[in-house]
Length: 464
Ligand code: TXA
Ligand code: MG
Image (cartoon, rainbow, N blue to C red; front, side):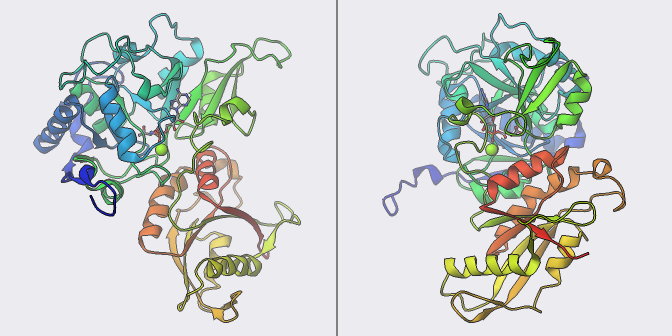
């Protein structure tokens, strides 16, 4: 005990096991066969991690979206450990990760007939960053009789309540990251895994992010390099009413996006065609019952936040859009932020260091960086306060500035978002300003995460 807090759970020596994703080869995109692994140290890392999972312990693994904290999804004891390790509220359900369609049978209700919408989405996006809700196959037996070191592999399956938080649905995805799929296939277990961060913090996209956050709390971290997508999977519920009551023909089906993510709404719409409407929660519909429950990230609990304040700043650039009365000039924005930060920490003797997570070379970036060291902002306490920027670029929206926004690539800012937030926080900045991006394609997931991390949002007017 230390300061009255039990430290017994901080007793692991955390080991980072290297994995080379390009040494792992699957025979086909969704088959149940085991992959071949050409690199001996990757094979050994996966063997150690699989054994650990089969003994009901936790393993951190890379996926194409973010790193996950995995446990045997069929074991209540193992999955309960996820909640303890993350400090996650128990009423927030987990996603189950599978490596083959065979494995779906272990977790989905036997009577469920896969609807055409799901079939098309699975054909197009599995393996990949898409999570679908299914009616759950519940664990028949109560208690932990399956958990005494033995593993429910090849059995009938069934998901314990810990995973679904008592809901009638289970969220499932088939990750495309070779290390993730190989780990699931070798362990023979569907893996329940939330993002591998302390609850409420930004999701980790590199093994080192996890190491700094969960060191001492987990035994093994598989290091498969930086995550390619960088934001979590898209969570989709296509189980609701089959027909859209509001459509004129009455023949439209509806799928609902509970959380925008790595698969974009535009991609899904293309695959589903005109007969299916893809609705995004909070953008296209509200659901009071859903919002009172934590079944979608960020609705009930704080999310994605570094310990320092985060400000979302969107810029308007005439002539494409006109100023609104809510737009403020850059100087007014900085004065407001400076005053707020000085009020938070009255004993400030030095200037402020503010992280700027913004598009490379954007007009907002240039306008803000130009204020560095040249301007002093009067703090509420009287004396002037200096301001230094620590810039972390989100990359460029590739395409020329006269290209329509619809043609620019937004995957790069999404990939860099969490890495930027975590990196700036580790540099000890007093606050982070994040530049807003267009709310379409990968930009929808980006803005969804930033809005949840940000205490305040501003729209600034930039001079021509
Ligand atoms: O990309 C991802 O999805 C990552 C990687 C590790 O796969 N995982 C992830 O897990 O983001 P997590 O726990 O951080 O977010 C999953 C969210 C939960 O917060 C929960 O709200 C929602 O998915 N979810 C899980 N089961 C659900 C269910 N039965 N109904 C509605 N939402 C559910
Ligand atoms: Mg998470």
